[in-house]
Image: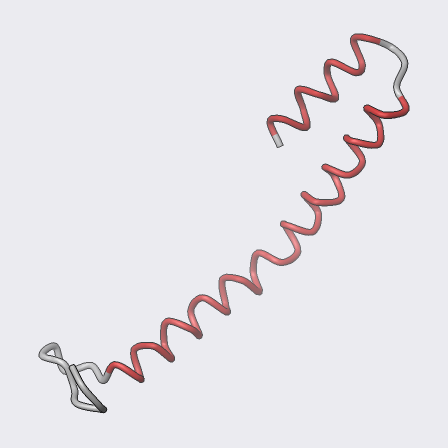
Length: 68
């Protein structure tokens, strides 16, 4: 396919790219908050591991950070 010629399925490549970009941007917007929460939770787990002196607690925090 060269230039702006429509493809066989009738969808213009540029329009298809824009629709895909819009769909992916929507997905990224929806995932921003959950990923931010997971990042903060992971940070707290790592800090908890660094501060904890109790062996079972350190093990639990380590397993939780690996699962996350």
